[in-house]
Length: 275
Image 1 (cartoon, rainbow, N blue to C red):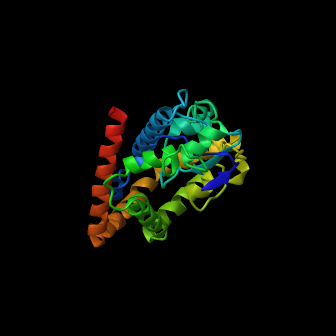
Image 2 (image 1 turned 90 degrees about the horizontal axis):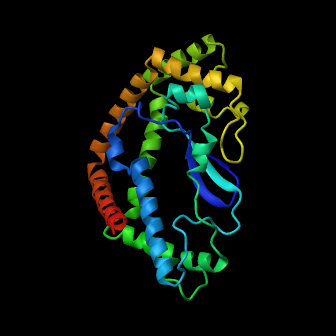
């Protein structure tokens, strides 16, 4: 991940939908983008109810941090294979619509220093343990046997498998064909779609977005067209899927434990959002 700025913490993918990415076996052991969004929304709602109950009647649902102005952004590709949406690439290159990104920022006012202290339990007698934010987390994680394992075990193993898959001879050949195709279309040679995505020439600013030059846009389009012409994603995903199935079989008990914890979390989130 590329980190920039300071202040509020937020993350951004490349903005391109990943609907064309094949669903891999380990996906069922992770919350997914929608799951994370629902968890964050439930956490915000529970924290707001707590704050209102402590007398902060106008506390916003999605508050900004005190003195926020510059945003901390983690930029990540939307799939292991890079961007896949050709229409998006034609319009936004390796970046995204700035207006769409702005909608993902907190839309409430900034908290006061007192509210911040109560929200996070910092030197405030009013706050419950770890503040209203901590209280919200405890409710959402109630019944989850091992939160750390749930959040990090599958994703950590997945990253290792992705690195290993890129060294597989079939994937290496597929990437070589993809790279030559991009060169044949008049653009720079890259080792992988990630290298193309992270090219410093795209001039990402503090918000993580690119400058969308003519060369960037052309490269992004060639990147996706070459994946389609050479079935890069088909070959790559087949190798990943095989490795993931073997991983799940070898550590079945761990993954089933994660699955049970995820089911508990989803139930708690659903209850918080419906309440």
